[in-house]
Length: 347
Image (cartoon, rainbow, N blue to C red; front, top):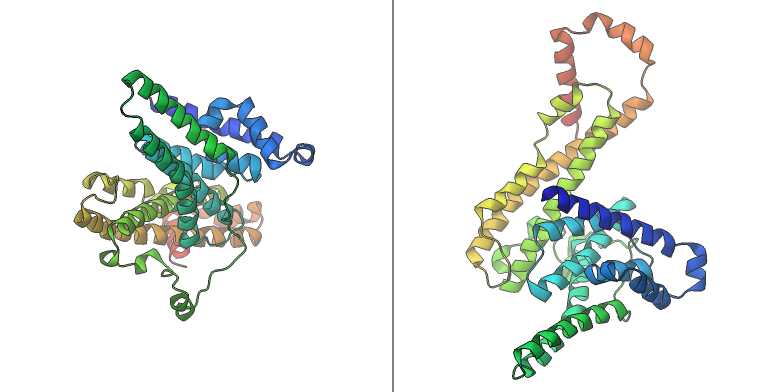
């Protein structure tokens, strides 16, 4: 089952990549406007358009696509597909947020949780307006025969997809190159949120804000886990030492194990869920975030150090001759451990 799920994810990623390759072709962009590009792709790939309308909208209309963002989106659907049409539009809004975050990472710029949340809310609210209209119409049609009602629901679902695929009137845009104010006084004056999630007091949040805060913390945790895994692979790649990976694993905790903390808490699916449990969960996840942030910082330090030393590295032959007498001895192993610890503690 897991293999089938991974296969579906890879197929979706490949298709999106191929579609984007055609869409961003200069000749295609020159000859077709945003709306025409979008409609052409919808007709060509109806199943993809039905499953991933927001991805296709950004890809075709705005010429924006990020494979890492789409992978995160697909992985989240695998773990939490959401309930009903509300869940469907929540996941679609997730992609818009992931796209912003990954675009920032691609240019090595810090992303803002405030902007990410605003993007999510804007997309979600835009789609939810249509969903509310659908529910209202459905309620008014409840006196009709059951079969007719089922047909009506299918029509309404298609109406929502058509609305998503045709809507291009959102006036919300983000500027990746813009910098948020870092001065605490300025942030307070402009009523901006705290600079870090750790500064937010969950006791002061209402139920809707608390539920959204839990979502933000979980998304941030997942982004750190993925960041650590990427950095770990990069650190190993920069080293040719076969013992380096095992020694590094002894110093950097497996980030995936931290995700297991969720087993000790109920699944939060709506703002009305147990408030005290959500606050307890927030306290626990904040502690885990500290561990993840330290691991991420350490790995970045290791990578920077490795990159610097690689530039100044002595020729392999000379280095081999200098250390030949140590090979296979306990002195060599001790030297390696000290070197790695020195790199890790350098931060």
